[in-house]
Structures are given as structure tokens and as C-alpha cells.
Length: 418
Image (tube, rainbow, N blue to C red; front, top):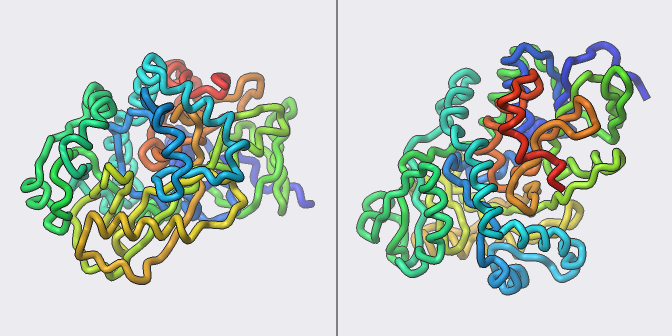
């Protein structure tokens, strides 16, 4: 195997998803030479398939108080928004135990505070970065609608909305007439909800990632297509073994999404990272126009008017990295979309499945690995990968440059919590 000696970067970022790209952006801004290694093109994996939401107010974790009562019926229902195949129950059980433990009221408050520190400035962070990387036109400022069939179903989520408002989210309560004034195509079955005027969205996440990558290339960042197989440390830095070559860097950022845990395991580092296999359908000629993201909150489904058609995203399942996609799971989204948009033509959609890297407390792992000097983590953002990517890059670049305040801000995200 060749030893890669032509370019010895100060930092190597493993992973060219949106988190890795944003981290590289802020490292370059800080004056650090960077190389990015990924087996795929930038933004090709999970970063390409998200709903596009920039949700700076999404501080409520997935595990809220009372989740234990809901979990059995939710997880075992194959038509529900979150499903665990029976053959995967034993494997995911330890993760689920941590998930339930994270729903304690005191822990939820801690998680919300940490998430706010990470994503509270997400809108400004993304707009500033987008302006400098040539993709500001891809961020839409038309806001989002989060809708429920009636006031009673809305009130089931009162705790989460109260927590979001506590950290400054503007959520305007609206009724049926106001819903259809904003989005005439929405079904009259939806009679209550919230308008989030200050929560923008990205019109095409894959293109967004590609333009950031193009900007990084213009700044001297080298992109290498290789599959990283292992990491090892010596007195001078980190050696990275790939399938095609070996690489060296004084600092390494592990931003490999759902594949990050398997690179840490040989170092004796275990992290409860699971893939929440997310699906979306794209309706290129659906015959329905939307101006903003519409969230069918009772169904946990996001409908986004992307540049290449309506994207309907939301259903997730556990099942690891190797199982094939489920056409049945993807197909559920068509029915959800039709319930929210009765005039939508749901024939012949394009299907997508990707691996969202999720940790049981809804917090990503960000920061230096204890006792592994200059090995930094940036993975596990779950449903907040796009939203949290800019804040992750900004804070991590500061921490890697020795800024003590950034290191303190990142302390709740340390891998040592596990």
C-alpha cells in the first residue's frame, strides 16, 4: 500500500458530509491547512437526503418526559414514524435504555441548554457561511409551518413547544383559515399549528454541500476519495490507513457520521451510536406548490418544496448499516403526504434512504477524545445534522485553536459522557 507523503496536512477531516464540510470551512478560516477524506463525493450520503430545515429552535430532545409510556407501541408499529424490526430489538435494547434515561426532566433541561449553545445561532452561522461560499440563494426565508389536526393533538406536544419558546423560538399559533391562507394546498383536516417565520430552510441540500466543497477547493482544501479503515497515533501525530493509501496529520477530525463508531472501536473507545435509517420520497411532478416547509407534526413528516420537486421525509427505523432499504417504509410517506396535500399526485416517486447517526441523548459527540490527543469528534447529530453543522464547525475550529470558551461550550458533547 502506498504511503501518502506528497501532502502532509495540519488537519485531516474524515467525512465529507455537511458536518465535515463546515468543520473544514471554519478550520480554513482559522488558517489551518485541511484535507478531507471520504469514499463518496461531498454531501452524497445522509447530508443529501434531509428535509432542508434550519431549525435553530429545535432544542427539545427526542426523548421527552413520558416517552417510556409511548415507546412500546411506537417502536413495534411497522407503520409508525419510528420502527424497530423484531430481529433488531436485542441489539438496540441498550441504546433504548439510555434513550429512556435521557428523558428525565432534569436531563432534558441540560440537553436543551447544550443544544441551544450549539444551534441557537444556526441561522446566522449558515447565512454568513453561505454568503461567503456562493450558496446564499439556496437558503429560503419563507419560514415553516408545523401543523396538527386539532388543538387537542397540538397540546400533546406542549412541553416540547414550551421548551423551544424558552430558548427564544418565535412560534405563532394559527388556525385553519390562517393555515390555508399561507398554504392553500394543505388539507382542511389540519386545523391548528404554529408558523415559525424565523426558521429558514435549504432548497437543495446536496447542491448546498457541493457549493461549499467547491469553495473549499478554491481555498486549497484537498479532497481524497478513499475509504478510511483505521487510525493509529504516534508521538508526532495520527496515521490513517485507507484502502488506497496511508495518510498522516497532526490533528484528525472524525466526522464520518453513522460509520464513526467503528473507527473508534479499535482504539478501545465505545460509543452508543445507532443509525436511524431515514427515508424520503421525491415527487417531481406532484402538481402542488408550496412556499415553505410544511410539517405534518402528528405524523412526524416534513414536506419541503425542493428545487427538483416536493421532498417528503420523516419515517425512520432502526436496523443498522447493512440491511437493505425497505420499500414498504418509504411507501408510507406517500400516504402521509396525500393526507396533508389532497391534490398531490403521488405516482412514481423517487425513493431515498440514508443513515442518520443518532445518540440516545439527542446530543452529538463533539470535541477532543480524552487520552487521544488531537483526535477530535464531530458526529452523531441525528435529525439536526444540517442545522448543527455550522455551529459544530465554528466551535470545533475554535477549540482546536485553543480557545478555552469554545472548549467549555463543547464539554456537554464530550464522548466521555458515555
